[in-house]
Image (cartoon, rainbow, N blue to C red; front, side, top):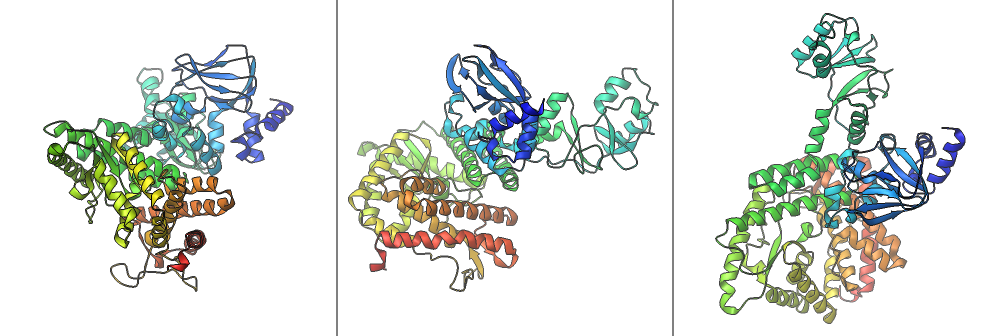
Length: 627
């Protein structure tokens, strides 16, 4: 492609996301390898169930329609990207794309683009939010789209096998085959004296070239080796690996020191390695959960999720995306447990009910194994039926709580579970309970509210949850002094640094001299976000991150503060999760002795908005007068 055309493509792309997030050199690389295509009216770009093209597309001029079942579902015009969703899913095209008018489109090489953005977090975030969360046109459950349709594992760096079995060009095919047999591998790399790759022999070569008699087994390896070897650096992603293998009909990639065949061999990536990655991605886990028929099987699935969480964090996938993904898996485990439990009950549920997740699971912030908090609402029934109905749901809840414990979520020590008769109530009982907490606030009732206000329907009747939410908001509106009590509670934990900028640690007990990141840093932000959205007359969303995002739009004058709180919470949630994975615990208590200087600085930076948001609460609710 001429430099003039490349420059024109560069100048066009630089004004549109995500290309505006690339450096000039990277964008020029993409522009140079771009193909320009002219489309007639109604000309097809791809059809339903077509195999993946090696490109995704950008509309330069004109318009392209995306169709499902011959119905137009999206209209792409200047600067719009299409065809990338299927690549991110590593799936066939689910939609049809054709020109609505005469058009010019740019065809961009998918594998090259994905290689370039491997470490570009801003582009990852754009793809995650734009081509994951906005895929409702492809299904009926937009809230589950991120798990079902966006294959984030494809952005992970592939773990390659090392050391690699190699031989020189002087070896015979028989010697190479013997090496493969002894080491139980499916390939051998032929290298020169500097250990640079010259070619590769695989099981397939032995079958197609030796077993068929085309070549003799005592001939040199150079006669049957495949060359050149496809080489990449250790930073290659799963998706780039898959695309390269598909495009070139190969099953092995060679990892070298600088990604070229002019440097030392480090390892090898096989098609089997990619199968292993795909067997441990959220989409596959979700399918396994839905097909699971035993608690033990679900426990194994949930353990796999821990590895995915760690891989995502190490790959710098946004924490809000990770928490949403984990919540979807956890919620679907609970759903499946309820389904299996109902199947084993002597009869079907006697009336409509709703299973609620509380606390961190309700806020979609439960990334690690912590104890479970849940509750159950059942529809109001005649008094004569009440005891029978409640007994049924208590028995059902007991089995579900036990199942969750086997999966890894310990039973709540305070018995905040649906199997506790206190938290398995009819709709009218729940409405009365919340009204009592709100209109007769005490230290104990406010504490209950901080747990029970963050509820999320996991299974059952949506109307029951909606009616309870409306009742709660009505009570808050009628007794707004309750917000002052919530405000006082939100100030219970002062900023986690002392006057001398030292971490405030536990002064006694099992966690003496440890820092409680949950109570001293995360909960002040959680409590503040909850209080401030309730003041706005809103009980949704429940996520702390989404609450601060909402507040930033509702109060433009405080947008900077709310965005700072959001970013601080994301930092703290990430840190706690990494601590928990490292120590195989909840990550709540941090041993400061083992914190690096950069970790300390990162945490101290995240603490800064806490004091400011608490000052806002103190002034807004006039708490200085009653503290």
